[in-house]
Image 1 (cartoon, rainbow, N blue to C red):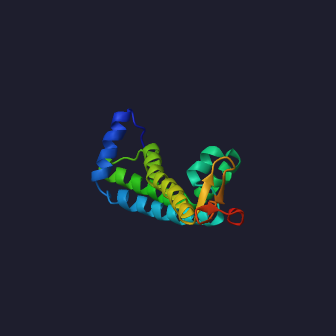
Image 2 (cartoon, helix red, strand yellow; image 1 turned 90 degrees about the vertical axis):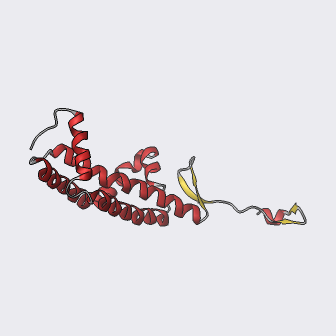
Length: 159
């Protein structure tokens, strides 16, 4: 195992990973991460939780819980991604850069997962007629417009 001497070497080898042996994993692993993110985003929307990234940024009290849940979901796929990156490095370079394998493996899985989870939660919430209330940091139903009768809104329709 070695350590990169420069950032330029890291990016040069990253380019080699994209075109070298096992390049297909850069399509397959994000696809798996997106599928997991969609699944968890649907669960979040059904439970009425805030969009994932929004919740991580704004709510400090729920941050540890959210990260723990995500870690439980992603630990096995991230480990597989790290191992695959190490194998690809060994096949191409005859050595393994563990730090680079951890960075690349985590990025390939975590970024698509977090984005898919947040987007899916938001889409499902909006399709259900729920909106995100930033002040209260909860999902709530968007009120319906009062019906009008002959162009006038009646008191009964406003309640």
